[in-house]
Image (tube, rainbow, N blue to C red; front, top):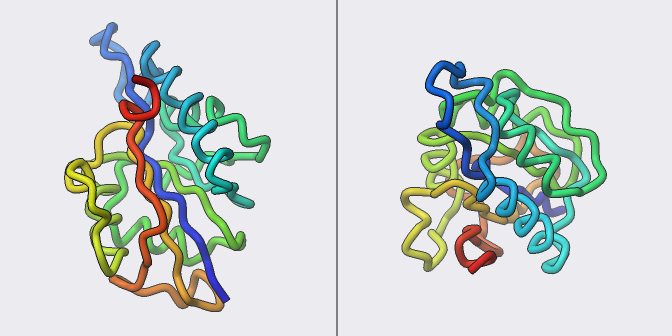
Length: 164
């Protein structure tokens, strides 16, 4: 069996109000456009999740809504600024065959690098900019069996390439 992970960093958030707590920062206009473009890209490449695991942060929740995938996205507080080990713990409890996980840097960049056997040939994979999205498959019967460095890269995209 194969499990597929879509690993996405939230889209660009607003810093317009310095008094807004980090958790509550919304997307800016570019972030909203990026979320829409990423949703179009996912559908256009037939990367359709059947489960979403999304950070509880407002910017992550708004990214998920902007994708317009029509799935519930319960807020997962453990994914807010999670380290790779925590992200793996959350993923191993997933039930979908194709899971979309939305999180934050630096954890999500580290998580992506630790998951795949071979990095995608993209110069932005290492820094995982806002909206960066990796699609990887795992030859595993379920998420509990997934281990580090076993993911096979299927696709990788960043919003700037989808919106310019």
